[in-house]
Length: 136
Image 1: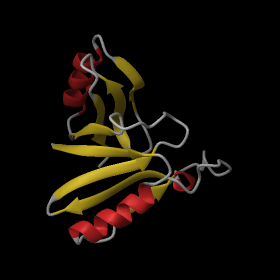
Image 2 (image 1 turned 120 degrees about the vertical axis):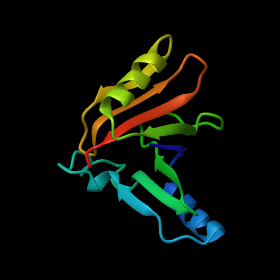
Image 3 (image 1 turned 90 degrees about the vertical axis):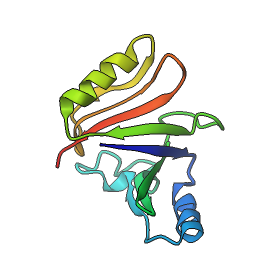
Image 4 (image 1 turned 30 degrees about the vertical axis):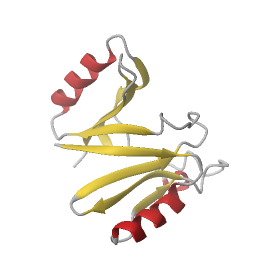
C-alpha cells in the first residue's frame, strides 16, 4: 500500500515537475498528457497538452500531480489530495464507502484505463482523497 500527496495545478504541472526535479535532484518525472490517454478522448481538447498524471520519486517517496484541465477550479488550499493505492480492491472499496458517508463524491469508484478501481472524493472534514487499485 502507498499513501502519497497528489498536487493539482492550473496549467503548470509540467513546470512544477521541472522545478521539483531540480530541487530534489531526481530522475525526470513520469508525465502523461490528456492527449496521450488511451482511446484519445482528449485528442481534440484544448487540454490535450496538459498533464493528466505525473509522478516524481523523491528518495523513495512518490509525489503525484496533474493539471486540473477544466474539471475543477484550483485555489490555494484545495490543490492537494491524499492518494491511497492498494492492490486489494475490497480494501479500496471499504475506504471509499466509509469516506463518502457525509462526504462529496467527485468520481464514483469505477474501473478506468489505469485501475481496477479508482475514485475521487472529499470526506466530511474537507479532506480530498484519491483511492486506487491498479491493474497490475
